[in-house]
Picture 1 (cartoon, rainbow over the protein chains, first blue to last red):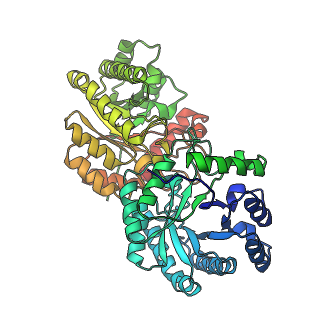
Picture 2 (cartoon, chains in turn purple, blue):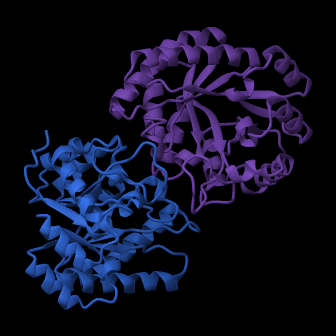
Picture 3 (cartoon, rainbow over the protein chains, first blue to last red):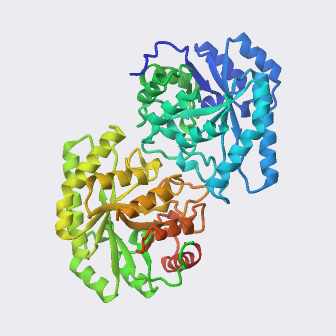
Length: 276
Length: 276
């Protein structure tokens, strides 16, 4: 059984979940709603003074859970691979400036080469940026993505592959982000969550739901309880494995983005207590 | 290395691939194009005299490779589960009438129950219809479907799960259909293809491609060579494992269905020789 969620102390919302809001609105409105965990997507940092945002985060008592996202290492082009490294180093600087202890890696894939080759490049990319992350005191989480993204977004598509990679890299600074949307269907999920946690690699836990039917590959995720994912059961698995971090609500949804975002935040809070 | 495909002797086309055509047109046009393998989807049999179709198939020298599809066993409703059994028994009759040696099972899933429960019901369903299939001399192929269909179309989402199920049922009449669209991303694919073939469970091989980007969950499959699937490599794996049956082209595509189907058939033939 999952623990009962009685309050919002472990609730974190991704800025992308309330995409219409800029970072300032996210901070103010999350805090006003009693939500103090925030994962910052890098798009909201564009053209912003990072020091001012850091100050606002502190003033509103916000805890930055992670920065999304680094990664996208694979490419048939060496120039693009180097540019990905540069971008990940920038992400480390941004995470440092925001006080984010973790960067989530959406690993990437290139349709013009094999998945195996893309995975090699992902591992090499992580190894390249690792000393910089470690020097900045920032952890890196490999996020396995649903197999429907294997063509363009990630060649790491199961938690087992992410565990394999983290164990090969074998650093306390590299672990795994478990997102129910990507992994709920996997018959090995319980086993691999336990393996992940036993290696101290379970760095993050993301929730939303899989709508039936789903109409869009990217922007039709559901609120917890709205779809077919056994969210509370998966949360019980990560908790029983020892995870006690934030439950991060990461929902990409054209439908919800078109609604009033404060009302939507209320729905998230309600689904968090009753369906997560 | 995959064998070189020099002719169309092992090419089979699914009637759903050329969806605008009725069964009579499929038979005539495939045969005219030098294609003699056909997999019949049950929709084209509605309101038809099966004997007349059987005669036409014989007259045109067509080989029926399989009937699509049985399955859809799971449901929270016992009435619906029974109705699925009845429908599968009808499929066996239809396969028998068409001279189809194989029925492909799209296993089904019910979003209102766990994947484990759906899988139990799938196995019970197959066991229920198995004596009828065996009596009719018709084999049943479990087709693992891409994890993006776990919510509504199949709780069997990896070839390993299909292999496990076929081995548990342990009948020469129950095996597995390997479709590159559903399985290409799986890091265990080579191993599990070998396992499948070693148990004499590799009953069918379906090809198409995964477009990047893909715009629709159901009807945006690509022609071989058009996407990111390593089709010739996967074909080499099934062949090296001992498979020598048809390469079945199963493409659901609103784009291609809107084109002239005879021209499209020409594209299929070309992609078959050069990109499969």
